[in-house]
Amino acid sequence: MKNIIPTDKRLREDLISLWNFQDKLSGLGHYHTHYASIEDLKLQFQQQLDKLIEEGKL
Image 1 (spheres, rainbow, N blue to C red):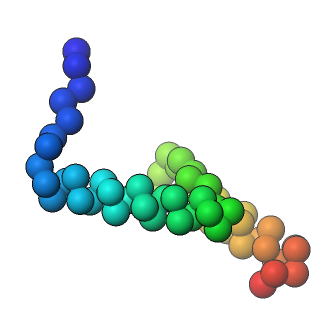
Image 2: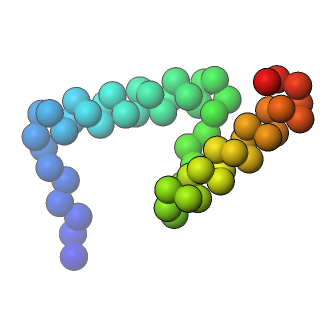
């Protein structure tokens, strides 16, 4: 089965915006993270906050 990629201009603009945002975050030292659920996202976010607190950055 082949993946069908829509060519709608609005989607293209959204993807370009997303890629630009991801590039900006990478440039700031942030990396894209995958999460399985909202609970997993909250856990990862809390862990990052805890790490910043430990490092004295918050």
